[in-house]
Image 1 (spheres, rainbow over the protein chains, first blue to last red):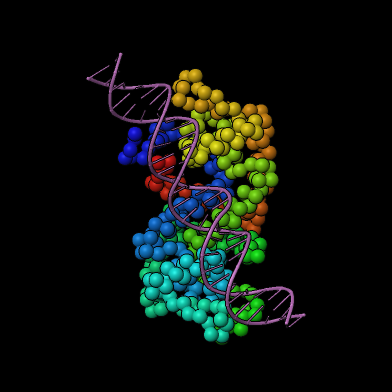
Image 2 (cartoon, helix red, strand yellow):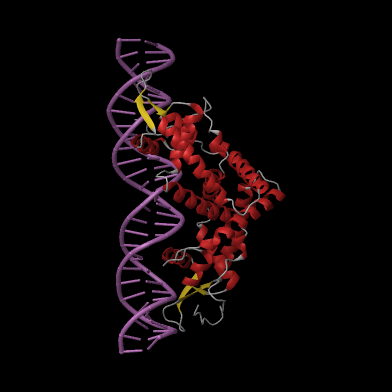
Amino acid sequence: MNSGAPDTADLSGGEATPARLRNLPTRLLALTALHSDRLVTEGLAGADARQWHYAVLATLEESGPASQAELSRRTRIYRSDLVAVINELADRGFVERAPDPADRRRNVITMTGQGRRQLHRLDELLAAIEDDVLAPLTRIERRQFTELLARLLDHHGRSRRRDA
Amino acid sequence: MNSGAPDTADLSGGEATPARLRNLPTRLLALTALHSDRLVTEGLAGADARQWHYAVLATLEESGPASQAELSRRTRIYRSDLVAVINELADRGFVERAPDPADRRRNVITMTGQGRRQLHRLDELLAAIEDDVLAPLTRIERRQFTELLARLLDHHGRSRRRDA
DNA sequence: TTATATTGTTAGCCGGACTAACGCAACGGG
DNA sequence: CCCGTTGCGTTAGTCCGGCTAACAATATAA
């Protein structure tokens, strides 16, 4: 029927969100995060990357080669999901996966030169995206914002759920 | 832990997140929102409710009976998902769904007395949850936080797809 | 030794955001 | 008056991220 254009409602009437919802911090947080995530995902997609790629590469550069379990703990990516991420990174030549001779259960993940280059590309890309997301805020406000988030996060961060 | 790993010697179980990630606003935002969402969802579950329920009830109280499409626009719940929400609310006797005699395409959704009571219960519940989420912040910081979120949201909220 | 824990891996669940399509009703021209 | 277009409610289904469960291989502890 109406094939082609997705049905587009307008705001002619200007139905507004109720005040109760407009001031709910948790709601604002959720919506903002959703939007931010979208921008990040889209942005990284342009570089054939995903957020987790960045997390893993950044971790590797900061603390050197690591097992997958270790990466999982550091990045908070579930180890079940991590395997796919490592696969992707390995496919693109950004990391190498090798069995650990010292502990044969483990794989040692090492970042390659290309990986390092990619990381720095992502660094720039991400900086631009962050800048976009935070566009309406001044530098000081951005600092405030980040700091508040950090406080919230680590306050509640204690109740971290590791897999059983 | 037992990590006798050669070079990546780290402390007792406390693998830290790399600084690059720790300071990424988008990441902090995502993690915080995730955590907040979890608290809200769990909290509301205790009252056999979901976030959407609150959004709909609040909207109804603020602007009176409305069609589903109208509710969809106001709450930003997709109209396809809204039908389930209305079903749930109707099942619990919080709203009534009746065909609109004036426009027979429409349903008129009306909040019942029970619905109003439930809304106020949720008001209190949610206030407690918000308080929990924002626990580490002072009153002033909470205001700041909320205001910053609101700014971010409506800056980007306008340009991007509203309800397309 | 036997028991328990850790690691990498596969598979799958669940819920939220979102799209597509359909039948029906309304509205506005011609 | 019919007709194309638009809005409405509804069903179904996609996609993706967080998360659980189970398993084989290996390591460690009792």
